Image (tube, rainbow, N blue to C red; front, side):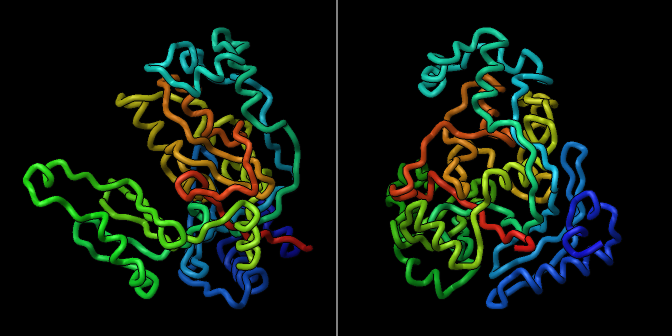
Length: 350
């Protein structure tokens, strides 16, 4: 078995940890640019919906990447409609008026099972068999045109990260947190969900711990972003690669299985937990429906939309094989709140 065969998932899962470590060392030695700083290599095991993968995480210039083994015969795409899903996932009306839903209802009606089958099949890429190379994949997608520089605690004001990159934008960022002097101003002040000044910075709030992930920002179009990523000796994921690293090529519409329960009951909380957790390869996949994720072909994954209360419609953008109906205008500037991208190093013989 040679190096590339060892990275085939069917072989990789049978290797000892010692052999996996040797292969990972070769990956880092021969496929990561010597100009990159590699650190914090960790051996990890991930699992989702019964699919397990023991692999490695590492930092490349401070950004986390995961080694994803390849599959020469990956089955991707979907043409099975609502197969495997209970009728309760779609047999209901939206909770409130939703313009996006109503626009699609003109084409799909959303009345019969056949209507929903048609909708699901037209919302996903075509069924196909492809060869997927092993890859080092960025663990979390970045906002378009953004480079992470650290975290800002909104309560204490403490910044952790690359201080020299934060200092030039510090004053501009801190102006967003100035409150009025009255008691009413203090009581009604809310942290902004995003901070943005073009070609300076973009920051996104994590409400759970009241911290902002802070990024340096440079305006970009799709084409200039691709060029910049290539100049960093990375690529954008192809649509095939994206679908594989998100769902592992399982014959399920959703990476976590067929349960689409919503709400605060036990089952709803379990589904929410699975959706939010790292997937079977250790990647973090956004579930907020607040932006699209780019692929190198221009096809968009995920979606920017409001929830309707209809589980299948609301979760459809989280399908491993979902393809957005939005057409990307490649010459238009990409707003960091609307688009994200994920870098990859493909491990191939070429």
